[in-house]
Structure formats: C-alpha cells, structure tokens
Image (cartoon, rainbow, N blue to C red; front, side):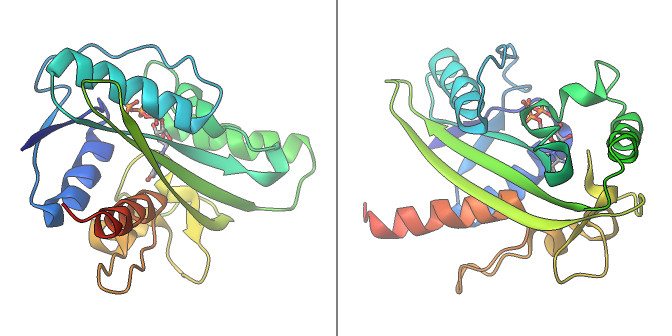
Length: 203
Ligand code: ITT
C-alpha cells in the first residue's frame, strides 16, 4: 500500500525515497499532501520522530515514516543534537550553523573533533501504533568540503573514510548492502534496522 514520508526537508526526503525504494513501497511526501509541520516538542530524537509520524498518519489516514536526526558533537556535550535544524535558523543557514560549531569548539579550547549523526526512524499507523528503528555513524568534524548532500554533510567525515559526506554521492553516503545488512549513514543504518525487523516478522 501507500505510505507518507513525513518530512519537509528536501534533502532528507530524497534520501528516504531512495532507501524505501527497495521495499517496493509507494511513497508520497507530507509536502505533496499539504500536511502541516507539527511542533517538535520532544527532548529525544525518538520522541520527535514519533510526533511527526503520528501527526502525518492521522492526518493522511495512511502509515507514515518520519526521521528525526541530528549531529552530536562530543566536546559540545552532544550539541546541536535534537536542535540541529534549529541551529540553522528559519533561513536554514547551515554555513552559519557549521561555523557556530567551530566557534563553540574554539571557545571551549576543545581539540576533540569526534561527532556522530543519529537517525530515529518511526513508522506510525493511523490507529496510533508506532515502531522505532535507529541508526548512528561515528566520525570526525573537519573544515567544510564538498557540496553534495545537505545540512552538516560538508563537515562530517565518517570513520574509516577519507571524504566527507559532502564529497560522496548519495549511494556512497548510504553505503547500503541489503544482503549483509551493512550501511554507512545513520539514516541508511536505521533503514537496515527496519529491513531486519521486516524479515523477522513474516507477513
Ligand atoms: P523534518 O522535521 O521536516 O523532517 P528537519 O530538517 O527539521 O526536517 P530534523 O528536525 O530531524 O529535520 O533536523 C535534523 C537536522 O539535522 C537536519 O536539518 C540537518 O541539518 C541535520 N541532519 C540530519 N541528517 C543529516 C544528514 O544525513 N546530513 C547532514 N545533516 C543532517
């Protein structure tokens, strides 16, 4: 059947469509349906993902997928974290948000550049049932490189890789091998988590 992808972020929507494609599921976005954006009042990624998925599922009367994600910097006590989108402000100025990360690290005299991306993926049904899948990827913050992807991709170099997410194609960033269950990005890892759960529950 049809599902809703409950995001208003075009970069995220493109990735979620690609990651859903192998499941053979027809997906329509919250934007295409003209659904409103609910306020993200949660204190955890999983809460905000559930808020978005439940709002879309009940408004559309269809199962809905939502991703709540962000970049967590160890030396900044996990910031920006769930505030990753909000750090860019209403103008969605991610150059500014990336510069703010560097500025805050400098302010603290921090030399530890380790960070990780988190994705909480929630599927909600119109009856209020939800399922949560999660993925994360460890890496290092570097000066911005590359123009691919979205958000904080130019400053994030995943562990074991020479290039930043901003220098990778979408396929490289996903890094998915459905057979082995390997994946690279936080979001792709959440979808692999979902695929495993589907296999565990036949039908
Ligand atoms: P929706 O809520 O409509 O899905 P959003 O952009 O507000 O869109 P979030 O609240 O989950 O989504 O904020 C996540 C932010 O974290 C996002 O705007 C990016 O800046 C950043 N982010 C998440 N995943 C990312 C990725 O794969 N690459 C780069 N930045 C990412």
